[in-house]
Image (cartoon, rainbow, N blue to C red; front, side, top):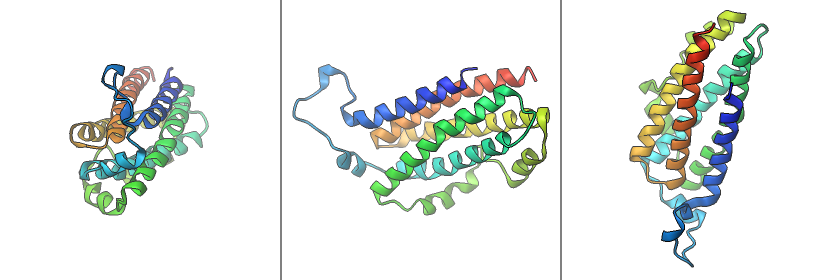
Length: 196
């Protein structure tokens, strides 16, 4: 499976986008002497950017929690293990990046998290997590895939809202990276689920 490759590509792209900043246009439209620094981009954040960063941190934290649950089990399908490892590898650094932006923007993430928590966004309930925790082997593999497909679909919807409504270029670029990477993983998970 290509989960590890997708995660590595997502991390590399995220890093490249952060380093490129607002100079990431074609060479034809670059303007010598116009160096837009990180502080200028940090100031360019609207409510959609803050909501995206705040909610995606919570969303990613749950994906990592789900991955930790599956990685602690025996008898899990090897490709599901690989997927869980790839999710942790990709989403851990993104949490740090998102938190850094919130700090730079002087935002209160808790306010936005509470506002958005009832919107669903693919988040698992306590009962969902308990079911995953109690499942073993093949059943845990199947349940993890089913839950993570829904979870990823929620992340893609959240990221699309950011692409549509956000103003911070780095945050919009990360949202597009999430859309691309997780849409690919959704298809891979659906294909794997069909074989279990």
